Image (cartoon, rainbow, N blue to C red; front, side):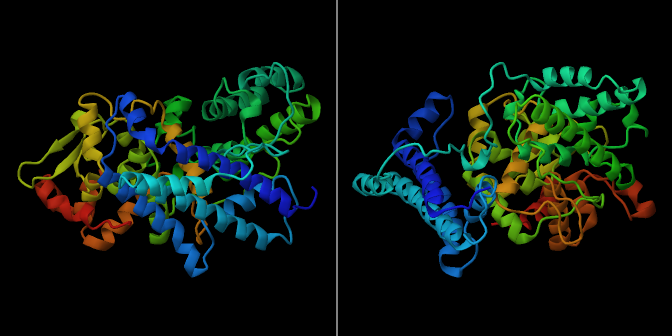
Length: 474
């Protein structure tokens, strides 16, 4: 790797700023395009709230000296291509500059929503790059970095590459081949059977390993009767039922053999394998929780998103519900409680009695416009775009990586999308001190109540309000 130069940084920032300028130019058309897509645009007041939250998050590092929102992105991206040692100060400075441009976009949107069109045009003009050109090394957007690959005709899909790889491994014994094919049945579900192999990134391999380490042991009931997809979708697995760390390492070894040894060294499809530099260390099995600071960062980012991503992740953060429960919500599942006057989610698709429950809707979600979404949908699935659970997992993995929130906490516990549920439960118990109320909201069987359990009936939405109202992320 050659040494990173200031010109390399400037070239990269120029491309990013060009993208920002195009985004800013599109602000006046946002309401119309939203309307054409079949949705109702946010009101100017709602839009100004969003921009205020995002702006506050971005500008905090301008004054307290903390790491900027973008600095870590630049460090990770540029280190894939260059030796960045000695350029830390220049990267930090570039991160602040880019965050300032992100802040200007929010200022431009605020000016437009305030009908200050001259102010909007002035900010737009300040965002215009002096020279709009494509740098010599072309990068994708910050949120979806890929490793530069050579142009290859007839790039195989993952399934096609696997079929050729199995033929290549003609020395595999029947038993070992069956074991590898069993592992690949999970890999292809996570990475996508029809995905062209050159579109698979290092972040996809890391995400795949996170999904795998959350799988149950297939030799135990009820998991051995489940399909691979059902195992991936399975949640609330007992701590002693998770796949062994040694088995997870086996998945990485298989990917290294496929992507590095075969597709890179033998087939020359990659210049750098997506498994390059990916490591897997033995980890403790329990899930960890996010800190209050991490949740503030996550929720602030969720608010800035659009479409299903915004609402699925906000609902996970403010309800403690399971991933599948949120992904499969319908408009009819959002109901009004006459006694309290509050809306709630009716969770009915559950295999246990405790899982069928009412979850009061947090006031923050109402203020952000969730009920407007429900009214627009009217009937049927709220998030029809979410077709499989791992879709949520993969997007969350990228968000967590982009925000530089570590996968492991200080206790070596894994933090994934399911950890939003653990964090909600931890925070709710702290604020209420009442296990029974929290257990009913999150769908756990009532515990530690002995003989009184048979006399404990379901509590009302009014009784449960204190659980969700005690959650304060931002």
